[in-house]
Length: 171
Image (tube, rainbow, N blue to C red; front, side):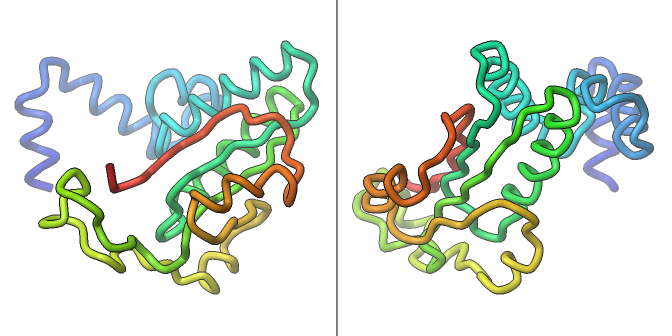
């Protein structure tokens, strides 16, 4: 609460922050209106899903894929599902979602650029069962990205890739 008040006090346009928060909280307006006002959870995900699907539609595709590298707790993947459903309503294009992760958390840092004093092996270990219960249609791709990226197209035969979100914590 104090952080929010501090944010309002130092903001050059505090009324805008209040208005956006009100729009977000009460789901006011269409999805595109809220996307353009930055009044959605993870608006950046919505932006890449919408604009990737929009371009794909203009190119004549009926289906696209969105990838997330680094799933961890699965909140990003769930959020991508939300955006995909909303964008499908607007553009009438199917959106497949794939989440890449080892499931085991971070590996050992390899050098100083991986910030070994900050990131430790095992951080962000996934509760696979819990995540799979929550997902509606996103697919999990398990393994090291160095290997899974080489076999992904053969194994999953994905639609053209419209957007990629990467949440790698290492260099």
